[in-house]
Image (cartoon, rainbow, N blue to C red; front, side):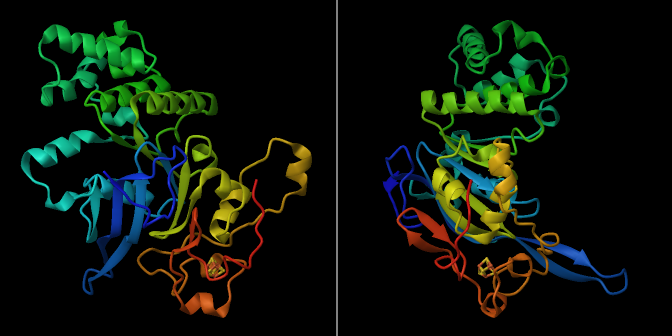
Length: 348
Ligand code: SF4
């Protein structure tokens, strides 16, 4: 790990400013077929478009955007579960694409992912104990059978489940409990970094809160670093130290969580925040809502200039022709908008 403030210009709120992961100019393209049987042509979707980002050791970085924004693809490309078309990812300063053999296997163990729907990723024929213990066996992390069983019991307890439950099968658990099994499975291999991919989206609000609280406690206890991918800004608000907002494959704003919600600088962030309900009905009645026109554009044929310009209430002629770079507005903020300094946007 190395000191690095290049990409985001900011340290995480834990204050160490040590980068764990550096994403450098990462692009992921998907070829898609179009046309008829007789006139078949290939076109390319830029799911991730030249993204640079630093994730600091010990922080939780929220990654937010609508469906099709490329956030899940970016999370998977960071883990090398998805091949990048261009750019690279460094882990602790080491280029991941240059790693081979044991180094790569060790790295894969250090980087884990927890999925939105753990049910589909939990083998229904395996007991919870076997699911959690699989990684312990593969990576030879227990010296003998007794140490293995002890570790599985410990992991179940860490995620708030009774060790007796090790013998049960996935269908015998609730959705929230299955999420806990997914978390225990990820923790079993002693990771440093976890991508939580839309992890609580399918759960009802009270269970969501319990899982988020569990993740926060585990982060503090184990010194974990998270990339928390979600389509809903309200979900990432309390768990994230910083938030990165994605639109059509590009990062449009990165800021400390409190700053982003209080004072959004990009019109897209502003629109997402304006959609979050405020509990106080008097404040809620006075708030300005930004209703975005239309759906996000087709990633296979994105708009020119600023991708957001056809939906942006503040767009000018310049926006339609000139791509806004992601630039540092102050020591803790990156924004890609030509008008970031002049717009006055209301937060929550
Ligand atoms: Fe809107 Fe223009 Fe800023 Fe894009 S660059 S977000 S279109 S004001």
